[in-house]
Length: 589
Ligand code: ADP
Ligand code: MG
Image (cartoon, rainbow, N blue to C red):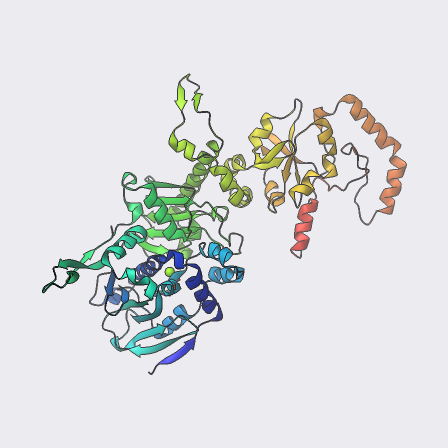
């Protein structure tokens, strides 16, 4: 086969332009991306070889090698992973297949500053090599294919790439970067080791580099580092979650988070546990600080990576985390699942059910912990036992985090009311709302209950498209007059989610936009009488109105909920609320 030139898919060309122009200030991330691809490729081989051990051939070791050539000004990252066929190289390195990446591309505005923020939310991947290289050569051979079926892929990172068939003795992939003038400080063993330690220490495969030695110069020539031909492992090469908690620093936890989430920001919090009992597993779960751009995209799944006895099994293991916790990132490593577990099998496994229940509980307790420490605690508070507790640094660090979490993910959490019956109560306690009597988005049902008027029997709330609309609704008039607090809800999911919550801690929830508002004991005898008299007096008028509106309204009645406005629309108790009706109409139902 001769050389063939192919064009990049349009999105790739666009992405390449962006990567090289927006990320030059953070050059070194290319190494993290290429090592992570090498490690993925080894994971894939290990996984495929579960069913076909012949794939290892005569090369059982899975490893990554990083080397450089300061004469040729090249840096090479090689792996003994799964490798690529010619067609795979064309597809994987010339197009963007992942829907998430495509969606990302659609969001790009062309405004460099905004776009470089966005780019932080997704993995820049293979193309990040072009941050430091003006030419990349990839040589690869798929495990299980003949030596003659190797492939060489070359590109200058502009519009196209070339592909040719080559002879290649070993399976796996070598990626050679021809470094740009301004990236030649990567031709240095110390520098490379430093970057590898920073980003890739947690990679569970050995990353090898050739040992160097200082050689004094002869005949007044300066000395230099020379390669010894001996290779050494330069990372810890043990999966982070398998190490003891006390041996892992906060910084290492955060670095690992960034590596698995592709987030550039620190996670808000995490939880790392070994669970023993009915089923044995290790969980390392993170709550991000920022919502990803595709949080509401259809088919968005939790970012949980599943391992079985340290062997990577799959990304986005949906069965391990419910939809309403899809923002959680992390790793679950099971000691009990079979290695050949499939997505279908996962759905039915008892172990998976136990792991999932345990992980949901863990996430909810992380959130409860943040919620408890959200507001600044008094510097020294007297505990119930009369002992003065000093607020620890740890607790201080948690201040404000729940509010941050809630403004990013609160609406998603609400979906849990409908999705997770077993944990409904715990989820309800974590919800926060705006209210007619409070500033900001921080009233919990419990706060509300503590402020309820004497004789008040229900938690009142109103739903609307926007907070402003909710606030100015005529349906609130009587509540304002009587000084009764009403929760204001304006998230799209509120209406749907609240359907699943009839009461909170024994107090019923009542929408002020539904049916005849029952103020119960809040209305005194006189007011009740006046209302009844008014209803009587208006009977003929109401009958006429009802007749005139008979196709458009179920009923017309006198109300005590209005103070200033002459009339308002309400729905019957059992009916869909107006907001839900509008929502369904928008959705074309
Ligand atoms: P991602 O890793 O998120 O899939 P990348 O841009 O990093 O995206 O890589 C694109 C694809 O190229 C990978 O999914 C994989 O199929 C292929 N690829 C990249 N590097 C290697 C490698 N070292 N060995 C085998 N395949 C690779
Ligand atoms: Mg990648």
